[in-house]
Length: 117
Image 1 (cartoon, rainbow, N blue to C red):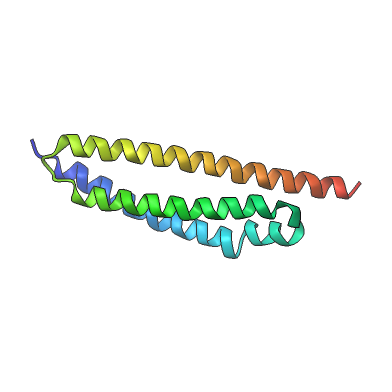
Image 2: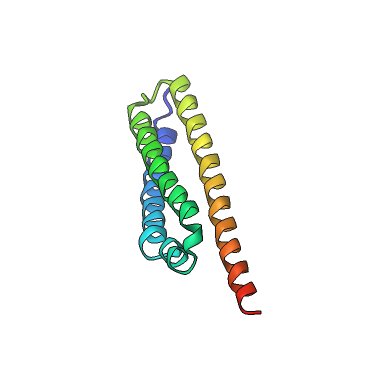
């Protein structure tokens, strides 16, 4: 049984997600928290660099995923399931990454609050 509409929808949403994520990571790296925290909290530079490196790994993983998704045939349910599982894992990695970013920002903010006392 062919499921080309479902596959097409996943491809469309994945491409939109990839573009959005790239813009977010670019903003974080160049105009956002990474630059600000690097300047105001140089002791957190190692953590910032680790998060930036993780951005690169996430970009590469998403590119590999997109390539695999494009190669899935609309009649190959097994490959489609595998690629969807890969996307779930990638989303979990992204959630974990976001949690680390939030923790870093909270740490930097807490230190700023403590400096004001």
